[in-house]
Amino acid sequence: MPELPAPTQEQAAHFDYLEGLRGYNYTVHVKGILNAYERGTPSGKSAPATMLEAAEVIAPTALYQFAAATQHQAQKMGWASARRSLEAHTDHLAGLLEEMPVEPIGRLVLDPALELPEYYTARDSEGLDDIHLVPGGYWGDPLVGPVYERGGALYRMAWRTGYTGSPPGALVAFAGGAPRGDYQRILDIGCSFGGLTMALRTAYPDAEEVVGIDISAAALRWAHLTAEERGLAIAFEQRDATATGYPDGSFDLISGFLLLHELGAETLDVVMAEAYRLLRPGGHIRFLDMPPYAELPPERAFLQSFDCQGNGEAFWDAFLSRDFKSLLRETGFVNVSDGPLDYDEPNYWGTAALLRTGEFRTENRWVSEADKPDA
Ligand SMILES: C[S@@+](CC[C@H](N)C(=O)[O-])C[C@H]1O[C@@H](n2cnc3c(N)ncnc32)[C@H](O)[C@@H]1O
Image (tube, rainbow, N blue to C red):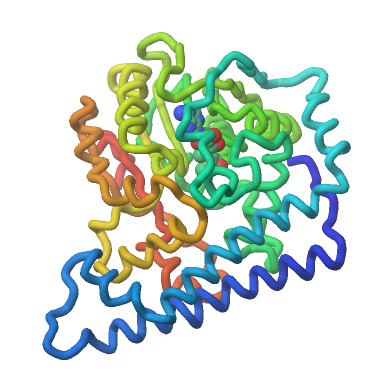
């Protein structure tokens, strides 16, 4: 990854403050909410059985409202601060992104004619920029790559520890955990800045081709630059996952990380149908994303929507409420299964004991049961 300019002392202090605020919010406020909830439901009422019933108990409390507002504001400020800290370096970074490597080992194919879908570019009701509260969303700011690089450390509460997750351990575990097979052509859908794509390339060094597709040209530029710097031969291509244009059966392994919850229900249906078309018979499809609400106790499910409320996640609730495995089966996939990723998230600020436990942060994988690696 190209090195980002160091933040000034004032900017670093701002990041420290925001990370501290988020840590405090989780470990004091959210823990307080759970403690109060666990102390019991109001007399005369039975324990909430559903997420909605739990919400009726938790949502009106002052502590919840304060925690939710804090989360939302800290998130907004975090992304905006990340952007501001790069302001003075705009020309330098834009130059890097424009220049591109002279003799690349991979390739970058952009499609200026590609029409971005409405769900992607629409601004939310508050007039904020797109999903994740990132100014410009994934697509509207040429510096979105560097902004995510910097802001992501705050988001993961890894700013103070210096853990920038490169490559993130969860992705390494996921990429290497596919059922055994001869994967020659590998596709990463919604590759963004190329985190999973690079992990896949590393896990399958002998594969004929590893391809990452996304609709954001700016994200793909950063992905390409980063992969080239790391000596990883990857093809990054600007294509819409709903209609990629690749021939039927083009890929042996199709993967995606944190894509599913970024798509509305109808788009997700179409993307899965397209993935089905692209996968060669006997190939594998695997996605890493958030576990569904149905797997959680009702109060945890409600609190899991924290990021959704706090980080401008338009489709998070819809995806987590959905039975994704049924969608895969209806699409035609067989031997569908899911399960927690075999990886322990680092426990920053002690938050793993609260929400960032397996339930909250652990992603699920969908594999073909029949071909799982030997247990
Ligand atoms: C959370 S990011 C994915 C992170 C990424 N997989 C990684 O490894 O870091 C979601 C990505 O999905 C992309 N996306 C959204 N709709 C898409 C579509 N219809 N086709 C392709 N990519 C899409 C967004 O541009 C964004 O880059």
